[in-house]
Image (tube, protein in one colour):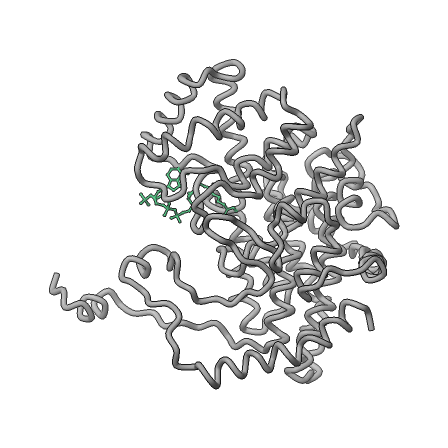
Length: 427
Ligand code: HAX
């Protein structure tokens, strides 16, 4: 058994006991009331999902297993995944064992590249990524073992197998999409000994004299790895997985949800917005020019991409993690400077506009600008980068859910007429 699997196996009985105890002792306790407004507004603020891998505090932002994200930005992806799964930071042996295990699983089946090559040239890179997941579903260990009659208590082990295979392969596929489909070049083979993030940086083939790209990807992966269990894409994966669809189906579902402009595609939209500003003012505008531009954008009924959040009520620390990096590495970059200026100009405007509950920048308001700085110029690739890091958290959450044998997610819908009757509104 691997150290990760051993550690999980040693913890799961206590997790199961804790869950049974909570349900048997407090099964009738109410956690969250739900208002008419919440029903109509995307269930915002309803406490309805348990997630122990991470927590988002409205003021302080993301905590991964109790660590503020800003304390973890130099950690490797292997450490983060081990931490997400088990709640423990791995020692050097455990980290190394996980890295070596992943390296052995990184071979991409030829049919994935064939399928990618055959899709129309205008297929969005997120479509390619999601379809790669679906194409590889036939290899799911979970699906095979389910067919063979695996016990419910063992489903987490098969999910862990699928997770390791997917985590090993996704950076190779993502980098291959970038090199082959977007740049029209050959792919760069993974290199043993580098680990998830450095290998991803290596396979993207970015030339950076200053040697900062690898450090950037390491940080990028950490800050995108998890953001509790009820954000739209992760929740999607949890719903799909709850019917015992395997990880390939579940992660494809998450990718499809992440591809929306209000969610993960916001990193692409945010740089598009910056490009429009740069073009309109032939460079970095003055603050007053930028204010007028942002007001005109808002008054045309659009959202300012990269600002606002459903849970956060303060600046996203993930934004800060990337902003501080940019300030050190590329303070004079024009795109970065526009992003910096937006960070100052937009919050007072959104406050005055009076709609957004959080007027501050989020992670998607900065990540694309740094990818652009490092030379990744096809904006459609940005959400692929997000998704490749996000699978760490999704996999950890779904391994835990299968360990706890969480049931199918199936709330109850009601009709508008039922609601009107409920509140005695005859309209
Ligand atoms: N620009 C303009 N208006 C905004 C806004 C923004 N950045 N953020 C919120 N609003 C508006 C909403 O559209 C909503 O308007 P309506 O009442 O007319 O529908 C109102 O303010 C209240 O919204 P809210 O309660 O503050 O925000 P929500 O929880 O409904 O939505 C979003 C959260 C992130 C979707 C929203 O802030 C938004 O659309 N932001 C821009 C897109 C973006 O950056 N998305 C990425 C978010 C981070 C993420 O998930 N990354 O993957």
